[in-house]
Image (cartoon, helix red, strand yellow):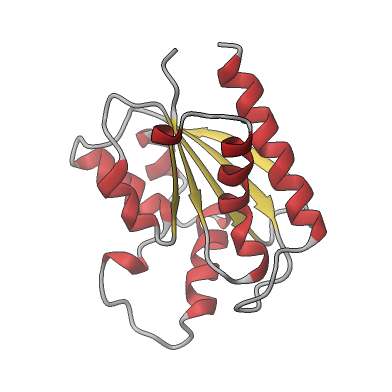
Length: 168
């Protein structure tokens, strides 16, 4: 079986752990360890992705629905360029900005997920499409646990990913 690489993006800021929770749940379901990674910054994707791998990215977001809402989309280079600076991109960027208020952009760690993906595509180091899953969160306090709503939604995302790829 050709498993995708599943990336969980997150931090230790409450509901921002949603992507990490997805990866943890997939580990519990015996998803191949070599196909799982937890990252803190979208720029780290450039170190772990190969152009011939299927890519699934899981992250938290805010502002696109009710707490615990799950969003999924397939992104291609054309869609990435078309949707640059849309509400979805700004949702992820707000999390970075909230963690570093008034800090000027200093390098690749400040790039949004979609900016990193666009860069990866332009360097021919990313696959031709990526599946993006997000979970709506509400609590972003550093050092806190994710909310029950986020934990349940992240488990659901992991189960959906497992069902899709385990049965493929």
